[in-house]
Image (cartoon, rainbow, N blue to C red; front, side, top):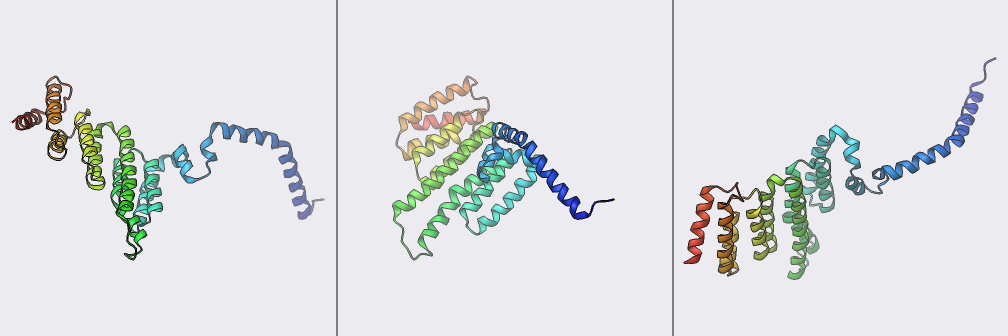
Length: 254
């Protein structure tokens, strides 16, 4: 005689409870193994999961598509000047598709150039509050440094773009920090890296001579740099670049 439906359901529940009791030690062992060997899946926040690489494994071959989607969402927040949401989604795009240089450069530039203005405008409450110049400078420095840090990380991912990335750092120092010494240092790093930007040596020397008044230091560096180019240490430097540097050295020495 077949059992009524209610009795069948009751028996099924009892069996599941019994199985759960019997298998709970196994489940506990699996849980401990998972925590020890896959800590990314125990992240408390989305940012932790991104940092531990969990999302890279979860999305698999769809990472690039998800990165583009996250970037589009970030752009919507950019239009609304929402700093936190915009930066979170931009950094998510980088985490999902770290080989996309577009994400790195635009994230760094938006943080360094746009976000200080957003925070300053928020603090001013539509112009009703005057901010102390020292506070404005502090805000600009905060975001500029975050942009510089992002570019420094990008250099490790894109070594062939090192020279160009250091130039972007120099521009942040020039236009956001108004720091000629730091600007010059980044131009020097570009000039001395394996993939230099052609105008970086001249830019470095110009800042030393015209803004910092250090002609002797500029001439000494140029002599050393020209010698290194002639010895083949910087094969990317062309003969035309060498001619420009020698002309610049003669102008300084006059």
